Image (cartoon, rainbow, N blue to C red; front, side, top):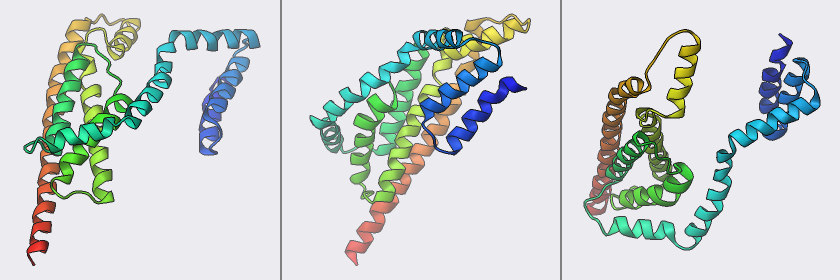
Length: 227
């Protein structure tokens, strides 16, 4: 049971709002020491884990690039583009992006998600489209930004497993084969297609309802102006 002390340290540390990195390192060292590992072995294990997952640090490089692009007017250009397209609505932009993410996820392409697309491009586009319908209040902006983020979540989460070499499928395959069950990656990816279609349908309904609510806001504002 002492080997689970790391879980307790993580829970307590996060609840107490300590530095997350310090909490995780403390939990890792505590678990390793209880398991009989030497400090050098623990450091070697942490270093190996970092090297194996070093691609995660690419996020640190993406953020400054996005910041420079925003400072140079990326958000404004995205908003201007949507204002020039009168028939494009916030829901249509979100649904188009969700389908785009599902297709790219199914092809095994990772385009960055929230930091590289939603914040600098998709969110400003949907905000500009909603503004044409009069949805400009802070509450509306928060709702639109949240819905824009959900289009990334739907598309990425329910699209990536259609790729046979996706990390999630490889993990499932490894667990099942260790338990004695032989599975095929291509067959597993095929089972993800109905789920992706269902996610696309649900996303479409939610985005259509959002557009309907925005149109209701526009109608109400028109009535108030008429009065």
